[in-house]
Length: 264
Ligand code: BT5
Image (cartoon, rainbow, N blue to C red; front, side):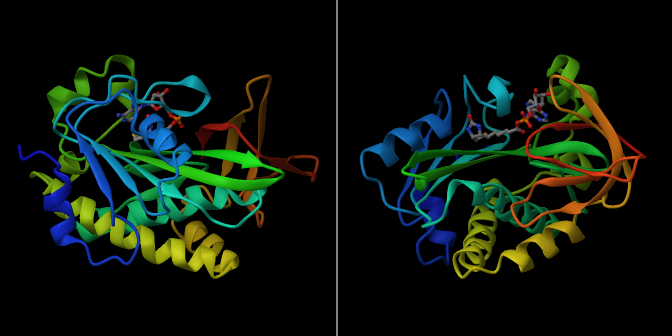
């Protein structure tokens, strides 16, 4: 399979800022870590790090992102939005909408799962990890890391061990291989378009569009908060992207961080 080389991706890009500089690698620990180092050293907004594999791919809460070589997409984008840290969940929404649109452009239906997953047929096909450097309650920079299972086959998925039962790839849904270069360029294009809306302050539009791609809206959910599990009906997300769960006693619990473990 062709490597995801920076020059070949750039040839396909029509973006203004995103992907002006792309660093592409065969293998890294984590693209988010490399991007963070670059940002600390002054790399401008829109700089992108891509790798063909990761040895220390990161999920949220020190979890792992399984990142086999040559089949998927592992990408991190450096952003420097002039916003408060509380606005950062919306960057995850921006990335999620972009991932969904790029997958839909391949002809496959995909949905979001709060807060950061993309599902095809109820199984996880992409995850987003947004990390930030903060100073005086301002975002100095944000790194939006996106992992998409593109061309993993049944065999590759089986090799994921216990994660295999809940994971899938675009290829599996499509029945044939995805052109990784074209997918990457299309995702970067969508990301820029949705990020520009974020910068213009179109928060309610982003929340509305995200909610339209969210199948759990109005469904009964169980959410694992780490120290406890709460249950209720997903009644929406607030202006910061926090989950609003309507409990059986009628009160609404606002959830900043957690894992949806069950929905019906
Ligand atoms: C995420 O965390 O879903 C965020 C994943 C972000 C990965 C990208 S890749 C590029 C960039 N560089 C990085 O180092 N990271 C970012 P979370 O919601 O915590 O989900 C993690 C969980 O998803 C794991 O505990 C597994 O259960 C499952 N998982 C791990 N690898 C997977 C994969 N390839 N496909 C589907 N599920 C996976």
